Image (cartoon, rainbow, N blue to C red; front, top):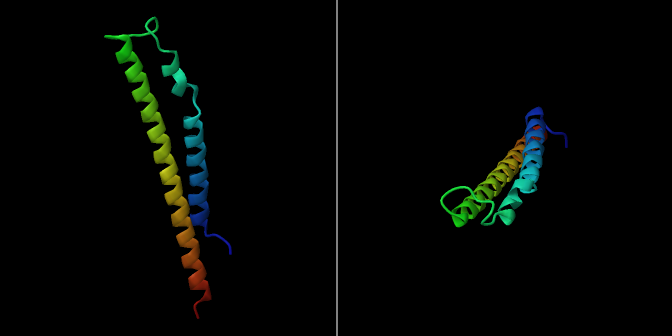
Amino acid sequence: MSSSPAAIRLRQRAVVLSTLAWRLQRVYALDVYLFAGPDTWVGPSPQACADDLRLQRSALLQQAEALLAASRRFIRTADELDARAATLAVSP
């Protein structure tokens, strides 16, 4: 079964989003909070700095998950387009 141009584009976009998500999940900035201590803090307290770094880490990981969800939606839509095209091709 061949894919339609629209399905191919959706799958290509899904690959790009998945790759970006993979990179976000592995960025060194995610581990910055591990190095935060009393001598590295900026702000009202060392704990507030560490909490903020953990919050930023969580936000990055949530964005990566959102990219993966969008990638899965693109693939699902591409599969539906291909299935619909195959059904139309078989119909008399």
